[in-house]
Image 1 (cartoon, helix red, strand yellow):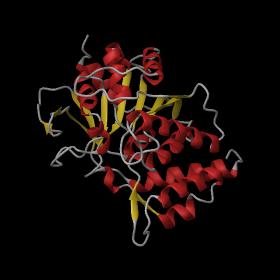
Image 2 (image 1 turned 60 degrees about the horizontal axis):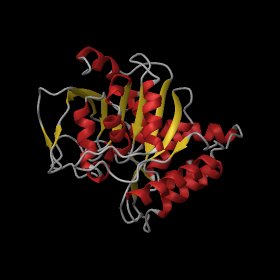
Image 3 (image 1 turned 180 degrees about the horizontal axis):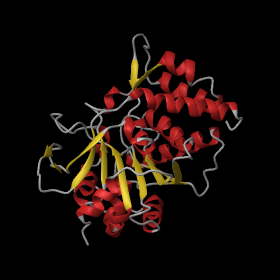
Image 4 (image 1 turned 90 degrees about the vertical axis):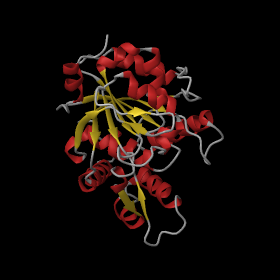
Length: 308
């Protein structure tokens, strides 16, 4: 049955308390997933992080989506090792291919785990799926088990601002068919756009060296990943996009949003407006300062306590 407007609004309304969540991440693709993952793990007072899923990606850092997923799986384990968090039963391999234009649900242990955790919830206790990569794992779960839409909220960093001239953002263009499944499924959706919104969320080598690098092995690892991304650091700053999706879950006031009709994603990778469509929550701005202060404060506290 389609989700009623009232139930959709209830699920899209930010709620207080501790939230059940999973993180879907193409961790090896770039350097920002690592920061988002660490912030989520270090926020147990707000995020009950129940699982982490490795998402596929394909660019110069991988030989194909399946290889990208395996590289991401390994990177997740490297991060958790430095956070002293066991990976067994917590980290799951994702799909090895995209949903694609045929909109085919791909098999993976991550897909099955997501479905099981979503089905264990309710409209009053939904599963928050923080997705910061290609949406293939999530789209596969929605295709395989459409019944989970009334107990799931997807928070996806993908696409650009609605008024941007195109939507060829990396996460979205990796699996356009998967993104179409997401937008058309009716699942309660929070979209955190990249260019025009999250592109404001930057950091620099001096900031990372001063505040992050001294924080144990995980701080050294995060600083290494940040600095090795660019060869010339003079006047250089780097987007850390993926932290914005975790930030919305932590405190939605850091990422102000509005309710808008869900756009139609065309095969030409543009948005088409249809005001009769179900609504989604759309982040319009990212307040960098509280996001970075929260991250640094938690990293320092975990280091001082001896947890790292």
